[in-house]
Image (cartoon, rainbow, N blue to C red; front, side, top):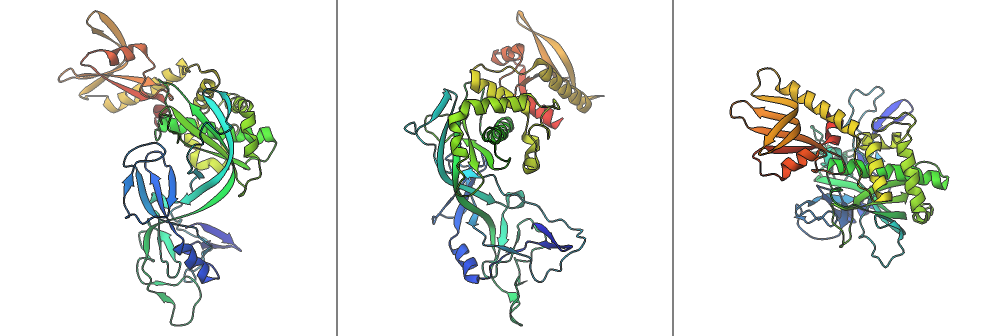
Length: 440
């Protein structure tokens, strides 16, 4: 589905192709089965004969029934523009765009017998070499429709299928043999594996902080710190940006809770490795401090992220998942062990935004009224509710409070926490302030 401009003409990738047809056939025969977790997005490929559609417990986050078979996985030998499609000079139809995943580390976490470089009990690093997995699961994660006989391929999201019916072979052939009657295989995943040098870092937190896999707040915190560590590493080693990339995953060790432990790994983008990543764990503390300075001292003093601190063309599809303030909170905890407190002004600003949106939705003659800073009396004690919603017909009340990004479910306001612990009939809803800031 990708477009390539050559000599003023637009070509669209619509076939897996090699001048040696045996090479393409061999790639399909060597296919594997691709599994991915619907919660944490951990993925791996396996050579097995299990029936498609099975689900099992994710080996990374531990969620039962989330590790799903997504389709046949193959390494494409090459791509081509189908011969029966006329090249465009000013295309008016843009195909669904899909992107390859970040590299996935599929091996288990090395044990304590390995030479970990520990900064403290919360942050440690280890250099090693392993295979990484990169895949493209197609637009909306639905995979591709592929004809193994001729190599024609299209996204599953295509409304008018070509591969699913009698179709033209995508390459030149003898007269009378242009049509292919091959049977299409659906939900095919494309990808590659490569060995490279890796720096694996283990991050551990304690309640009320959490890094629960799959939550928006955890993804933002870990994505932000990953990008900051990768940038700090290139600066520390004096190499070009992009020669080291970073990704995160739930901890794959038996002694760690998936909500309290995560892993970030930095890897050389050069297949085979250039030795850059393996030099980083020995400088883990300096790396962490450089990453914090990068996040804290943005020249633009941006609200979340910008091109002066974290954003780049290469991470453009993840700009919404970068927030330098959340990253600073996590790094401060890793360095000091002190549970961070979100700035009062930031929480107050988020609460004002949430309250105004509730007023807009429930204003006028609505059945529910909302008040800010309302006083509630329960027994002999008075509480101040950041936002109080009351149903006029029966008097039912709901208190709404905020929690910081890294303490999901743990209210920032002491009165809200007391209401949560009380036997009151008043319901309490705690919203992550990061959700408010990124959506309202």
